[in-house]
Length: 247
Image 1 (cartoon, rainbow, N blue to C red):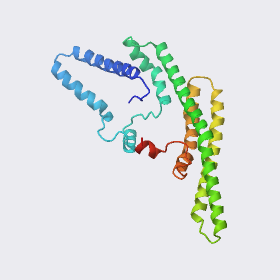
Image 2 (cartoon, helix red, strand yellow):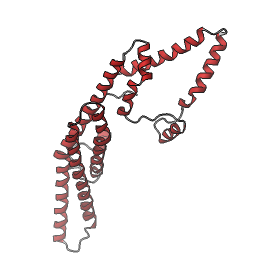
Image 3 (cartoon, rainbow, N blue to C red):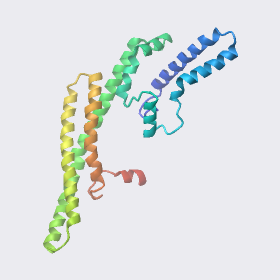
Image 4 (cartoon, helix red, strand yellow):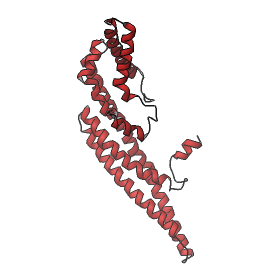
């Protein structure tokens, strides 16, 4: 499945080369057969038997398929960075050079470009996240908790016996999540600076995958929870509900 931001040219080139290689192997086997019809029958049976494990008619997006694929011994390549090394493996290079599609040097250059593209894309997303958290979310949450605290004090001064447990718990929860968001934000800032010092290529891409993506998730978690708690009037951007049902 090609991402919406990607061109289909690269994946199509790879898929067509794979198909060409398989059909070439089929042709080599069938051309030397004495009984063509029988050879086709045997080839189909052999191919299906050898590759039966890749056929799955259930929900390919479910956790059940991940478990089933693991049981079948199929690889589970979870990220783009993990997939890039496949471009430069000896088997891949041999197939692409066999059909004069891409040379070893051209495949290596594409791997390098993909590493750089991944790192730059996640870097932009991380810096955007830092900008939004610093200038939008955290200030808005502070305004809300301040308003909530003022409301608690006002009610308390007007009625000493008022039950303020709901407001107090909400203030505590928001303040706790705010603190987590601030800690996660500072960690993300630090890691982005560290990433900039990495040399372009596989090392930098893996750092963004293993460190930056995790830090971004840690920042997103408290912000997502706060979106469900903070008054809509204080929230600085359209909520998930707005995007899903009101756009």
